[in-house]
Image (cartoon, rainbow, N blue to C red; front, top):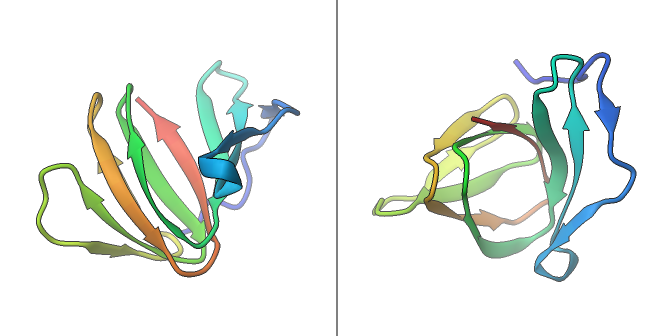
Length: 105
């Protein structure tokens, strides 16, 4: 099931822009104080480093991803999630716009 709305959330109006605009996101704060990031990765091959643990949820589009130390690429489409440990990294290959919610912690 795809998360379509984050009810009651406040959204930072300034975008987080990474990799020369290939990834753009906005920070979202839920009423509980929990923070998430909602964004899009445009067609590219990128490597993200993590400080906190993350769960990447695909909202639309698709990607191939490979966690640090893994040998095989995995596919993620709408409704799919993958977990990335804290202080780690993952590679992502996107052929079409990949819309996501990043759940921290």
